[in-house]
Length: 229
Image 1 (cartoon, rainbow, N blue to C red):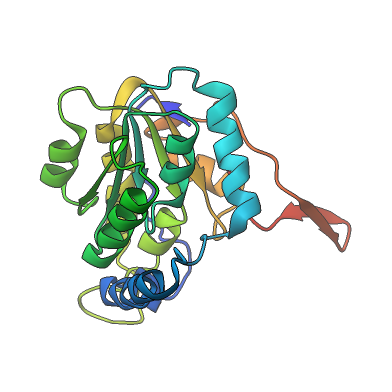
Image 2 (image 1 turned 90 degrees about the vertical axis):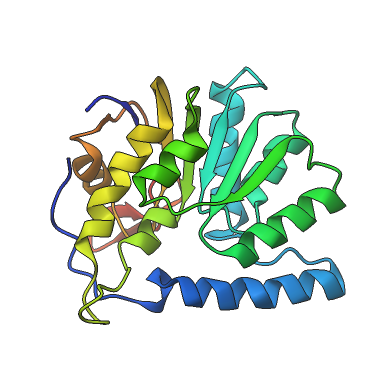
């Protein structure tokens, strides 16, 4: 999706989940930090290696400048950026609202001697001031999202732990646009939303300029994918 120009008010009919809570991810990355210290295992690759390779392949094919400014929102253990750095990309930023995730990503990058190419930061991507702080005046050529929007759409409201916070889903596309240069590109992978739903939800802000094909399945005469990019 590429920069163009609000938001759909529907959060999608999902119930709120622990996957939308910060304390859940702090616990996850606490455990993965301990595992990394003990065994060197960086932890789970969200959505699996195949999906990550599809996203990385798109970057390699479409972003020739290795100094392009690239942001990974909700970077977790930093896997995508670590792979990009190992391929020579040098202007990478990863953000997460979990301090434990940021700590893990920093340690892995240092362990692999890739820390000079990547900056990992804590960020509340739903806070306009924090978005502006990270984006700076230059902003980003490319923003990556592998599952972060999915988690945000499951964030519980302050009133009812089973009801999603629709304002979070509405704020997210604005934060993406505010992070991108006018010519910037947003590459998102989701397992909760179809390609058509993603296009509709971001249409007020971004123009869909392409898609990444994933393995498809056929059921009852209909063809679909388990994830959409």
